Length: 182
Image (cartoon, rainbow, N blue to C red; front, side, top):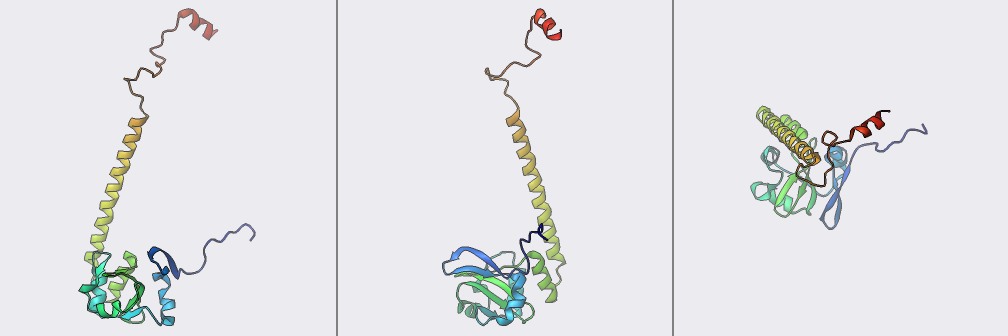
């Protein structure tokens, strides 16, 4: 046991924020919200199914509050982390700004919640796969471009006069060659 080093254990409940709001240093994490939700008294809003579907189906990370029916209830909360829910079993952590709300959930969690709400996610899954393939192709092209640039940078330029002559172009007198071989 003296050689085992445990770095992380347990479930992630909070994440550090990057100073988006002066008085908030941490936000709730989606991974632990199901356990914390029953103890929460503030910063939670019950929303309608239509609003939840709109947020989860949105292609944009930041959803304008004006497009939601629950905008009044959400604006009553402080800016920062707000938990929205249709039923107590599936709360969603969000970040609420002045004009937008952003669900802090992974794409996989988003698909799971949509399936639980009875939505056919085949089209969304295909879109996700095509985006991943497109990004992978772009990453490969960028890697090849970097590799070619590195190869060009490593090649000695033939126009440089300071470059040493190669062994093929050096003329060595025959007497020196005999001394080297003996």
